[in-house]
Image (cartoon, rainbow, N blue to C red; front, side, top):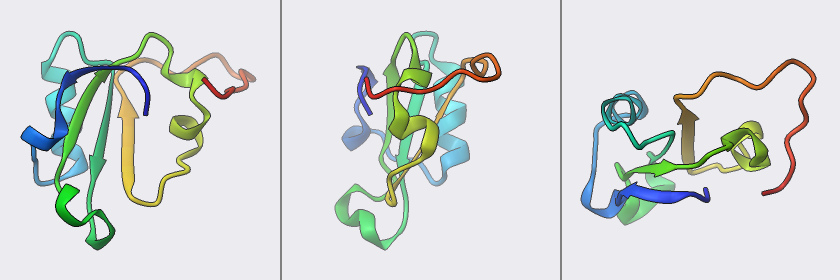
Length: 88
């Protein structure tokens, strides 16, 4: 997921996607988060990356969830109905 790093995931491990979301909500500059869980993550398991991205809904991978390892979310409201994501 693109965006400016607010908190590096390698140094920020949490127990769940919900905990990663909560960490983003507690950080004023954070607009999106990504969390890796499960065996496919290997050494990255538990990493919670907090990022700042002006328009996360322009990233088709975030909107459509194309990663089988990473769970992501945003603290921003959803785009208007009918908006189409594009590749950022």
